[in-house]
Amino acid sequence: MVKDVDLLVVAVPMKNIPDLPKNVLDCLSESAIVVDTCNYYPSIRDGVIEAIEKGLTQSEWVAHQLGRPVVKAFNNILKERLIDGRQPKGQNGRIALPVAGDDSAAKEAIIKLMDTLGFDGLDAGSLQDSWRQQPGTLCYCTDLRKPALSEALSSADRSASPEMALKVYQRWTGLPSDATSDDLLRQIRGAWPDLVI
Image (cartoon, rainbow, N blue to C red; front, side, top):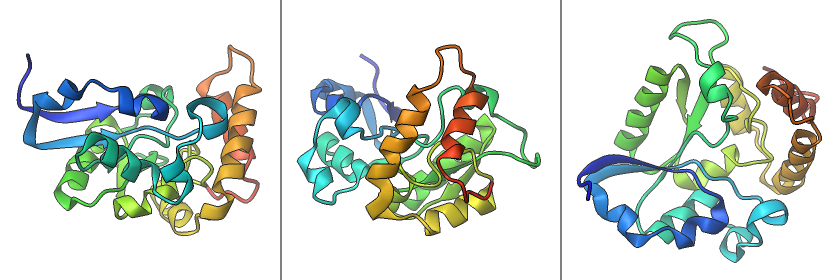
């Protein structure tokens, strides 16, 4: 079995987190970073998770389930954009991605990884602040630049997020099967008429 893994990326539906084999975490080194990329869709896919409904952020819930600290990252970008949205450092229009967590060193490591992958990383605060990048917020799958992402995070409205998440999902799933990532992006941005890119 593989041992002393330094980075684990969790990318499964939220409802499947409790079913992850416990030995998955056995391969991690003591200082390993666990990245939570998951998003909660209660009415569409995951069913109701009571602790999240009562106010726990999605990533706080994931951390409790795994029994390890996590960093919330890569959850607010379409999977296609991870490939076709990459740009060199300093490029005008480079997509910025938020990173939330309670370990500054872990966040910095993920921000460096993002830079290597072709994205600007932005420290988005603590894990308790990670609701600002969950589905239904301005920064969710809208490919913002760093200044716009910072503004979107600070102006996020937690009470409106569940309704907006459903609206965005409906726009997303209403597209034909051959829709491109640009088509998806236009539909999602269209849910936010006042969005500044």
